[in-house]
Length: 160
Image 1 (cartoon, rainbow, N blue to C red):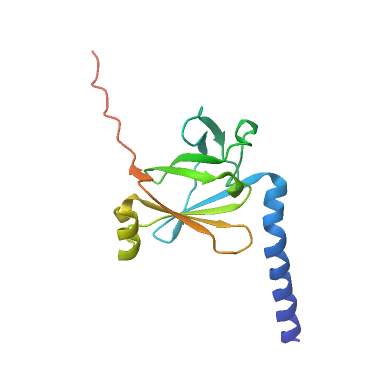
Image 2: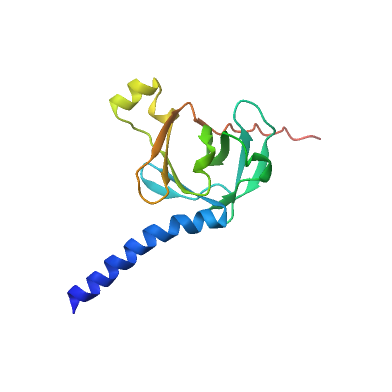
């Protein structure tokens, strides 16, 4: 009985891993999740999208962790994605347009391997790793210079 239950669960998981990415694509939705040091944090409420190497920024709402690519960017080859989360500015440069309508996990870590640091010539706090999950193929990209702290706005003096 336990073996039969386990087999049914395994088949259901396999079926979902095949169907879920196609559902995202059918929705025309990019699901975005953000992790800091391996822990999930609240994602952005808006993202700014623009055609890489010049373009007019378009602010898009993120609802239930999902945002849609605006029609004016549908034919772009690569797109920049900008958002704020966890007191950080994140600017993902040159994301391939085919990666939209997938599930993304944006990893922000305070440490990185020596090899990654040497390759990207950046500090760990400047690196973003974006894992794309169109079905668990493990495709990801590491970007340097994509993180910076949100600058505090100085308080205005009291006016009398």
